[in-house]
Length: 365
Image (cartoon, rainbow, N blue to C red; front, side):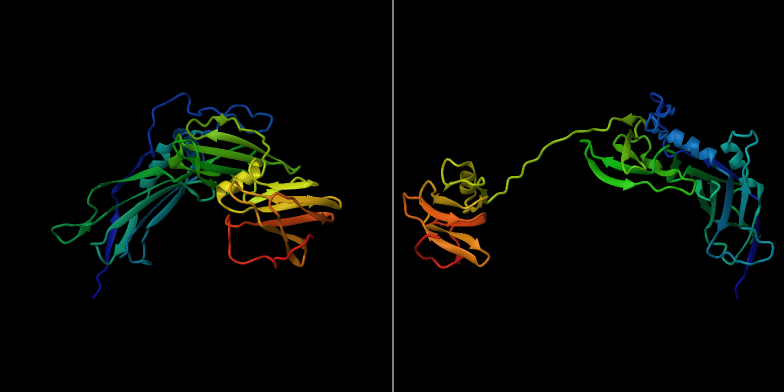
C-alpha cells in the first residue's frame, strides 16, 4: 500500500550569486563602448566577464523558482511546487541582484511525496522578457526523519547558488552576423562558429570565453549594395583589432607536364631546359603540350643525360595518338595545323611503362 506524505516547506531560501570567474581589474577591460566609427561598428565591445554580467542583470524581468523530485505526487490539493515573479527595480532603471534574490523566499513550497528518501531539488532562474534564463542555479537535499517518524528539511536555511548562464547576450551595433574564432598558442584559427541571436536581437556569447586571450570575434555588416564590412575584436579586452588586407598574384606550375610556348618551331626536351630537368628529377616522362596558332613546320627532339628518345606519340586528331620515330642527332619535322597537341615521348629505358598509345610506324606526320 502506497503512503503519501505531505510537507509544507517553510525553510528560508537564500540565493547566493556566483560569477563564473573573478579576474582582477585590468586596463578598463573593454569597460566603455566608444563612439561608432563611420562603418557603425564600435571601437570596443563589453565582453569582459563583469560587463557581460552587468548587461545581463539589466535585462532581468522575471524571477522563478521550482522544486521537484521523482516521487512527488502531482495534482494534490494545495500543492505549490513552482512560482514566478515579475521583477521591477525599486529604483527605476537600477536593477539590483540582491532584490532579485530576495524574491525567492517570498513563496512557501508545498508538496507531497510518496518516498521521502528521494532527493529533492530546488532550481532558480532569473529570466529576460522572453523567458530566456540569464542567471540560474540549483541545489538538492534529502528530508530527515525525526524521532516521531515525521520528515522535515535538513536545515531551516537552504542556500541555492546562482550563476550567470552559459551564454549571455552581447549587443553589437551594425552587425548582421558574428563569427567566433578559437586560436591556438601560435595565433592560428583552430575552430570557427557563428553566434546565435536571442529573440531580442542580441548575440549569445559563451560566458566561459569572456576575457580569454585566444578568442577573436568578427562582426559583419551586409550592405544593401551587396558588399560586406567586417570588424574584428579581441575577447581578452574587447578592443577592435585591425583587419589585415593584402593582395597577391599566383602562378601555377603543373608537374609532369611541359607546356611549350605557342608557335615554337623547335621543341626540345632535355638537359638545359628547366621544365625538362624538373621532370627528370621526378623520374617520370613528362607529357608535352604543343600549341600552334597557325599552320607551321615544327621540329621535335628529346634526350636525357643518358639516352635519346626513340620517338614520340602525338595526338593529331580525336582518333588518337600517332607514333613518330626520332633519329639520334636529328630533329624530326612535322607539319601541324592550328591547334593544341599532346606529345608523349618513347624512351629506351627512362620512364618506361607497359602498353602503347598507338602503333609504331615509320614516316612523318
